[in-house]
Image 1 (cartoon, rainbow, N blue to C red):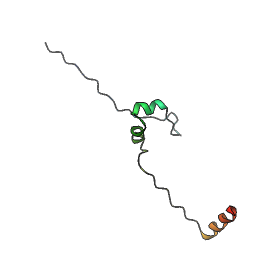
Image 2 (cartoon, rainbow, N blue to C red):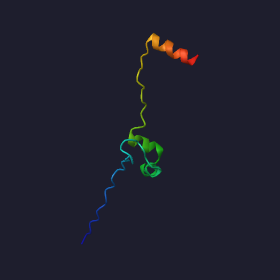
Image 3 (cartoon, rainbow, N blue to C red):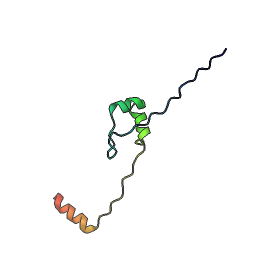
Image 4 (cartoon, one colour):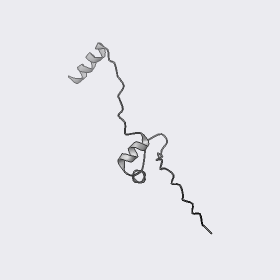
Length: 69
């Protein structure tokens, strides 16, 4: 009689932040993910983020330069 051995399918690790309002993860989460590079891929932090363009009027620039002087 042949015995069938079922392999447990390993669920992929999905990091969950401890606080839903902030992205806070534990060092254990990074280790479970397979290291920092793999963890960054899982949370989507491995792609560059382009900053938004902020337009200042000439008047706003002049005012800022006054504070810097």
